[in-house]
Image (cartoon, rainbow, N blue to C red; front, side, top):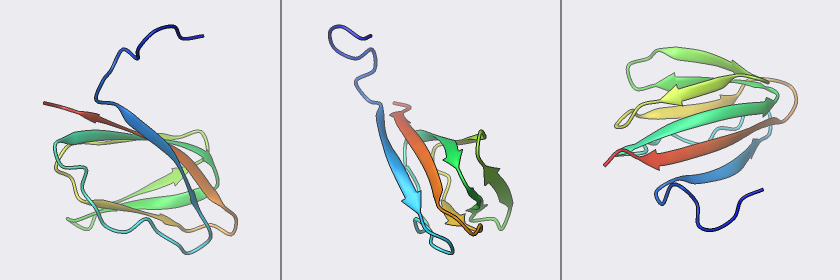
Length: 89
C-alpha cells in the first residue's frame, strides 16, 4: 500500500494493551500531540487539572502538546488502543 519513505518523519505509533485496573501512568508527550484510537474495551483518560474523558471502542481521543494525562482501564476486559504521536515543531 505504501511505497518509499513515510510522509511524516516525526510520527511514531504503537499498540497499548491494558488489563483491567491498569494504567499507562501519568505522562506528557512534551512538544508532541497525541491521538488515541480505541480498538477494544473501555477506560478513562485523566488530566492534571482533574478532568476526565471516558474512552471506549471506536473512539478517537486527541491530546494536545504539553498536556499531562493518564489512561486507565476501567472495564472488565482488555483495553486495547493505538496511539500516534507527532512533533509539533
